[in-house]
Length: 73
Image 1 (cartoon, rainbow, N blue to C red):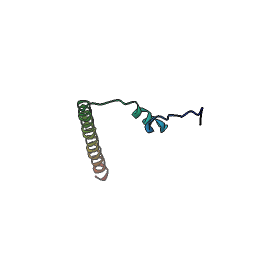
Image 2: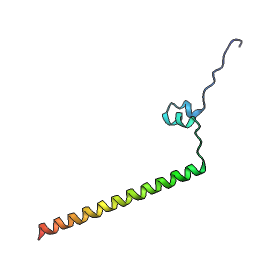
Image 3: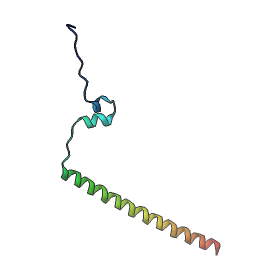
């Protein structure tokens, strides 16, 4: 087979055609400290979001209860 050329395909992640595969193929490394900082940040944001949602829910329940009490007398 003289004159035939071979084709080298990229790694499977990059060859998948997805944006995620392309990003994963870039090879960005993340140190343990960066991963830990990122995890702490996510946990803090999730706790704040949970507190806000609970506060809003309590206010809605209290206001609805007050409104229903005034309607029913």
